[in-house]
Image 1 (tube, rainbow, N blue to C red):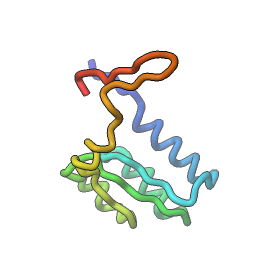
Image 2 (image 1 turned 60 degrees about the vertical axis):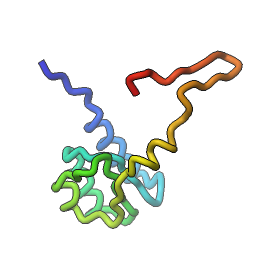
Image 3 (image 1 turned 135 degrees about the horizontal axis):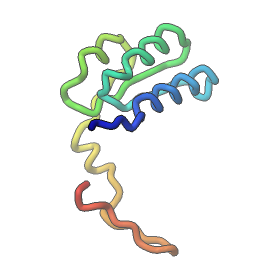
Image 4 (image 1 turned 180 degrees about the vertical axis):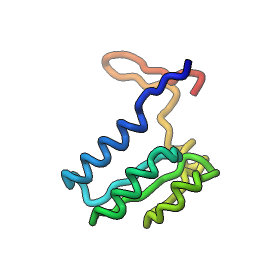
Length: 102
């Protein structure tokens, strides 16, 4: 049995709420999930603020590209790899290790 985590619904709900409350002048969504097309399209058409998209895959979902957002970028693998924290961090409380599966 497949179980949804609800993360796509949570993202859309929080995005809509934050835009309506004008919590920022610009919003950037990091996704390649076509489930976000409806909320993003509606926000683009009904909102004065800037809404952009950063794709998490080389193959962009066609539906996402069809929205016509003014900012669309792709996460480049090299930038992503140099932006990660070290495999291990430590502070006064203890050590934190990145899982080997990451």
